[in-house]
Each structure stands twice: as structure tokens, then as C-alpha cells.
Image 1 (cartoon, rainbow, N blue to C red):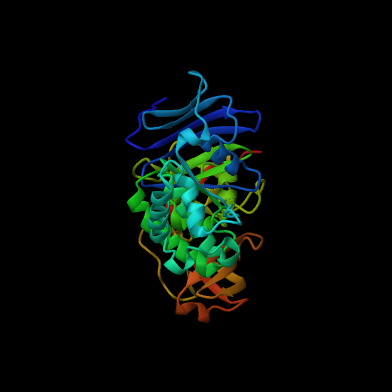
Image 2 (image 1 turned 135 degrees about the horizontal axis):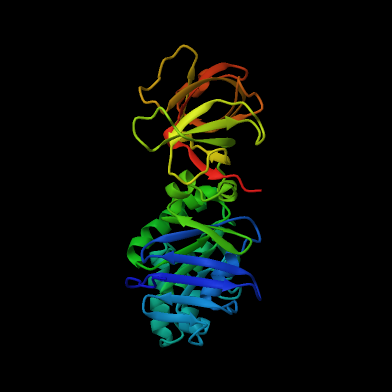
Length: 384
């Protein structure tokens, strides 16, 4: 396996079943952010604690470029203080009896007292904590202000890796948005790997350069948000990242009418053992057996909803139009979630998130047409 890293990059490889199961590889480049997503109990926080040296690791490797923090084969296991990790927790973990200035200064005990306080002011200013807040204790600060102090304290250690454990979940939406903007500004300045644990899939897509999906202690896929959402490795990944439109199908093999290889036939089924369903021409990657049961997903980008009689058919052979019925519509501020059922398979439901003024012209029980671009179809083997 290639362990080569550029300056400041993070590499984590762990394969253990005890004391806590963690398996898989995580990579994060300097100046980039990787978001760990997955259900509760998936092992996200445990992986974060393992990187920080707070959780014992029995087998694996943790490196920052040419600096090894843990290597089970070479019996290297640096203590947390030796790893220069910045940690920000969900509950802030501020000292209740200390002021914001004093709390950040705790990370600078290697400096003389006056210098500690001066440096603490610098970091607090960088996270937009104003002079009038420096002497306030945690109980006198808002949730967003407390999280900024916690971030300043983590950064004051000049960490080689910044670890964020659901840092925004305890603050209100307005404070969360300003913290997002602050983190975006800091990333370009810090130029260190950042690993974020979050349950919020939208947050992961908004903030992270890459997403690492965890389930039952295993990292089952890592990639850019676009790659993971458009091409999930399997049905479980699709479920964990909240892909709504996942359907059953049967792979019918290469398209015999295609002039060039690379096109195959997918039968869209309402249930796995159905015998009938529309056949779609899709991209053939040559990885499936003819007759194989599959599951497939399509992003909203590959779907267009329009009124009956509006001809938006594209000339490509990978574009299909189906008559659909609007079975439900929920208006959520600037967007609406529309649930559709096809007239050929009423039990099959398709969900789309729509924005824009045309939403007002869509009503429940309305007859519409759905245009499907099968170039957006991603197919996976159906596992038991």
C-alpha cells in the first residue's frame, strides 16, 4: 500500500476489533476537510479519539507526512500531548471558572504568563471574539461564542490536525451559519488537515472536500461529496448518505442494438422479483452478469419534472419521459419536496427537491411528466 504523503497530510489505517472495532483507511490533505458521516454508534467519534491518542489502538498506522504518531509494527504510540492535535467538542468543554481569555491561555502553558495572555488575545480575535467578551466566563457567553472560544483554544496549540466532534450541533441556526463562514475563512490560513464528525448530511456536503462514510466501525467509502452521492459503493452507502431515489432492477446485459460497446439494458422493477418493468439504456461498465438482480440510484440532477404536453425531450437515447402523478408535496421555505408515482408502477415512489417559482404550479394529485436522464443512473449489485 502506498504510504506516500505530501507535507502535513494525514493518513490513518486501523484494523482492529478490540477494544472498539475500527476498520478502514482515512486520508486528509493539508488545507482540506474530511467529514465522517454515519449512524449513531458507527464509530465516528471513536476514530477521532484514536487519531488524538485518547483511544487505544491495537493494530494500525497514524501518520502526518513523515511524522508517525502510531505504528503497531514499530511499537510507536505517542501520547496525546505529543501529537499536537486541536480538539473541539460538541459541548465546548470550557472551564466554568475561567474567563474566555484564561481558558485559551491554558493551551499556552509553555510560554511566560504575560505572553500566554497576549497570544490568547490574538487567537480569540481571529475567531471574532471581541474585547468586551474576553473576561466573560462560559455562563456569560452564548453557545456560538463558547464554541468560538473552544475553537480558539484548539488553534492556540498550533495543531498539526484539527479534529471537530459535532461542533455545531449545540448552537442555533444563525450561530451555526456564522461558524461555517468562520471555519471556511480559517481553513485557507491554517493549511492543516481537518476531520469533522457530523450527523448532518447537508453540513457535510456544504463544508467538506471529502466524505468518509462509516458503518459498524468500518469506513466503507471515501470520496468527494459528488462522487459519493452520484456513485455510492453499495446500497448501504446510498441509504447512509440519504439518497432518496433508490430502485430495484435486473441487468439485461449489453444493448444488442448499440453501434458501439458501452451501453447496456436495465429493467426497472417495482420489487426485486417482479417480471415486468420499463427497460432503460444505461452506461455499461462491464461489471455485471446478465440477469443479475441489482439496485440503482439517480440524483435529482438527472430528473426534470414538467407539465403534460410540455415537450422537453432531448435527442439523446438515454433520455426517457414517464407519466407521473404528484402524490404529495411539502413546501419547506425556499424549496419543496415532491413525491411522485409512476402510472405503470404506482407503488414506486420518486422524490425530488424543487426550487424556483414553478413550484407554485404543482399541486397534489396533478398529472405531470418526468424526464429521466439515464446517464445519471448508478447501478449496484443487490446484496441480501
